[in-house]
Amino acid sequence: MASQDHFMGPDNHRVASTGTHFDSEEKFRYELAKTVTLTPELYERLFISPKTQVAGDLRNRFGNPTPIGVLGFSVGVIPLAISFMGWQGSGGSSVATTTINIWFGGVLLWFAAIGEFLLGNTFPMMVFFAYGAHFLSFATTSIPWYNAIGYFNPDGSGIGSPGVENQTAVWTASYAFYPMVMCILSFIFLIGSLRTNLVFVLIFIFATIGFGLGAGAFFHLAHGNTVVGLRLAKGLGACFFATGVLGFYFLLALVVAIMELPIPDIPVFDMSTVIKARSRGVIKEE
Image (cartoon, rainbow, N blue to C red; front, side, top):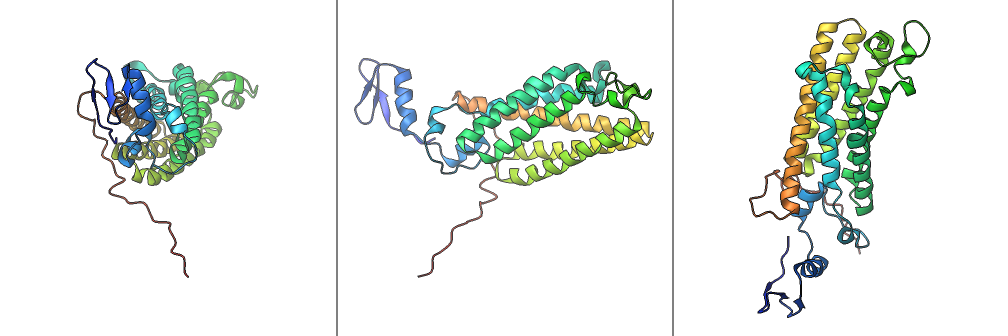
C-alpha cells in the first residue's frame, strides 16, 4: 500500500506531512484512507481481481466483500466434503448440513457477489454467484418440499424423502449431468484464475477434479457399480475438503493483510506478475 509521511505530534496526536493535526487515530486513518490507493499487487491479494479503473469511489466507501465469499465457501464446503468421505460415520450426501449449505454456502456467497458487483470486480462476482447458486441448488435438491428426489419414489407416489430408497437409477443418472456441467464451469474459472494467485488456482483445480469425480460417481451408481461409485464419491469429498482448507488458508492471508497485523504476510503466491495481462490498446493511425 502506498504510504504517506506522518509522525506523532508533541501532544501524541497524529500529524500528516502536510502539517494537518488529527486528534484521534480513527480520524487520521479515515483521512489517510481517502488519499492512499492500493497498489495493484495488494489489490489483487485483497480482492482476487486485477485492479481496473471504475467510476465513483465505492471502493473507498464500502468494505471488502471478498473475505465474506471465501469464508462462506470454506465453511459450507468442508462439512459437505466430510459427509462424502464418511468420517466418523457421517454420510447422507450432506443432508444433515443442508442449512449450512444454504446460509454459509449460498447466502454469504451471494452477498459477497453483490458486493463485488458494486465494486466492479467482475471475475470474483461470477465465481461467488456461481458457487453460491451451486450450494443453494445442491441443498434444496435434498429438501423434500421440492420433491426433486422423492418424485422418483419406486412406488410411483411421487412423494417421499431424499433417502437412498428414492435415489433410483433414473434420478442418479439424471443428476450426474449437473456435476459434469459444474466441472466444465470450474475449469473455465480455473483458466480465469491464472491471473490471480496460486492458492486460488489450486482451489479451482481441486474443484474441477472434484466435480468430475462426482459426475463419475453418480453415473456408476446409476449403473449399479456401487463399489466404484462410492470410491469416486470419497475422491469427490477429498477434493472438496482440499478446497475448503485452501479457502481457510486464503482467508487467513486476507485477515492478516486487512487488519495490518504485525506479522509477516501469509504468502498466496501472486501470479499476476507471471501471467501478464494482454494489452488491448490500439495505436491510432494518422
